[in-house]
Image 1 (cartoon, rainbow, N blue to C red):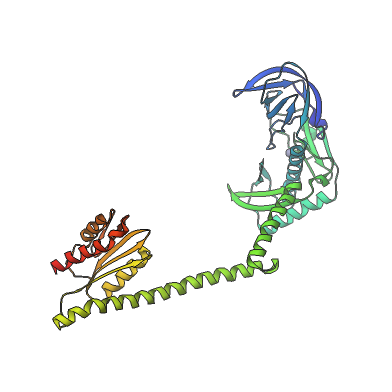
Image 2: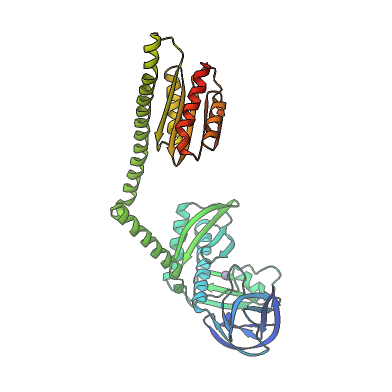
Length: 405
Ligand SMILES: [Zn+2]
């Protein structure tokens, strides 16, 4: 059985011990000591890290009554010097004790019990057994911080199960003797094997950063002590960048951002309307050009439908599609449109009631520019890599249409 030095003194970060057992854990060397200040993962609190002699301590796990230290290299049986990563220990101590205070505060303000606690490397959470609202969260946070700033003494003592119950702390199932209680004087007492500070003041501050619905209750995310400070530093940096990017003081940032978003939406709407007008004008111009020679030769309005052929530079396929739809709606015609934009794009369409196989025409033209395409009934699109063959592909399609007309 390993003696747990951290239970008596959570501030002990260097100690002498003896390696009494050599083991292996998942392919890594591990040792058991006669005594240790390393906290083994349990009760939602992660393990300590540090070193034993020359070996780095990668994980610390409960193994029955022993504590197993998983190492990056083997250690022989014998005396060894242990050193705990003090910053990590302090971090865990702040988050874990902050959790005790916040959990008790939620009992006080909302009658909400904590049913789970997780101390992560980034986020720390408690799960409450019932839904809590924003007002209750604010009240619990305020209450927890009040107790932090009162610097109440934190005491650890070991009692029987009956004594624990008499103090209002339900011992873990099956534990009848030697219940370790952690007490924030006059505020909270609960069974816990974790590392805790001398006074509540060491928690620094408790900041709730978010809540979410979870299994019929509420999951509360929070930060304590130096983690809260680090979060403020990150947020200040991000806000500083926003203030500079939007050239607006902090107080006006939200308003300026909202206005900017509205302007963008407005601008997009205007752009769409302008584009539609431009494409409508382009469609009318193309139809006039296509009909002119026919009117000259035939001299009548009831000649064969116009064949509109046009190629553009840099147009995207969507604009070609809108133009084609406009053309076939304005007047009976076949529209054979292309664009050179990185590759060759093709959009073919015909007015309702015309006889051509538009998808077949498109497939043929797309194959000519080294690609593929398809569509349905009166509209098809596609393209290929050979931009230089676009005009030829369009001319061939036009010839095929005129041959059938
Ligand atoms: Zn605890």
